[in-house]
Length: 314
Image (cartoon, rainbow, N blue to C red; front, side):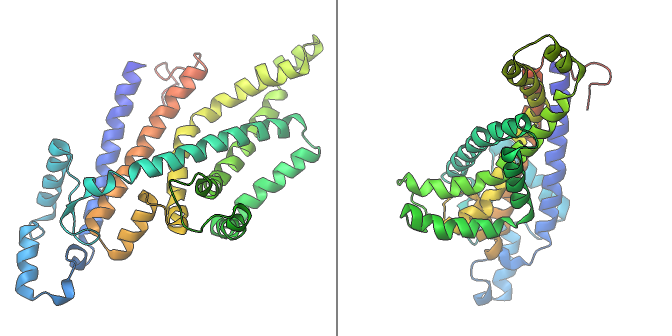
């Protein structure tokens, strides 16, 4: 396992390096207005001096090397020029990251609490009313654009709960609609795949043998079918956290939540290139870490799984 983790860590570092390199080069192709808060009022000489001070007149690979050196040695993601002039990106992100993490964690927890029992009951009562009801919900969530039901929930939910359209971190009621909205996609995902895995598992020989021996149906369903069906799903839980955080980009803008999602939309609109670069790095790190944690969870759930034996490495 240690050998496998070392390999995955090296691959992850390489992946992050490639992502950052591509993003860095693409950002450098953007108009230089993204580096000056008052570009339209500046003279050509002032623009040239500003570009020189920021090192933007150097060859692209020299700029890239300086960026990685500052990132690795000092944890420096650069300085915002538009969103908050001459303020470090890390200083801007520091108070916003906990908000997004809390919002994403609550949404993921709600998804698990609803999605897993829903998928289990759909599999247990396959072909009956609850199965059809759950299938209808899954089809609705996957077929309708998320922005549509996000707006619907906001429109009627705020009236139902008697809360403001704007988010208030100190009001617990104002967390309900954003968390619920962000969880819907994962609820449908968990329910759909758990049902499918459990239906497939229930047709296997050892389950049929247990039924012939008269083992209690609830024991078969929860101790054997659910447990074995949950193993292939568990690797996607950390990754779904990333999907939840990405989904918060629209949700945070919709409810004016002071997190990273709304910030990303804002800095893209303002063309603050350095801020965009820093936020993309954080999202990439969450995604890579999620993949590694997914593999670890699979091994913890089922010790028979080994990634170091022949045929086990992915």
